[in-house]
Amino acid sequence: MGMGKDLYESNPVSRNLFEQANSILGFRITDIMFGGTMEALTQTKVTQPAVFIHSVAVALAANDFTPNMVAGHSLGEFSSLVANKTCRSTMR
Image (cartoon, rainbow, N blue to C red; front, side):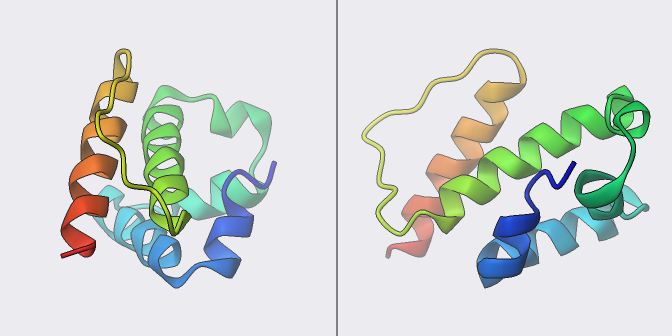
């Protein structure tokens, strides 16, 4: 697996996001994302937050991420809106 592990290890802002998710979810999603089985990762209670967390972490890790607009489909709508808002507010 290893989903997002490189971001966790290399970017403090992304690491903080992953740790906040661990706390909010009540289980260590990072354990599943970084080294869990495919069966564990594909459970809806894991897949949905994992995709969301990873998408936002990628945007936060990009130093030059300043979108003029964002879009997404389904769960992607949430991650695009959060990434847009978060990245814009950290630039002020």
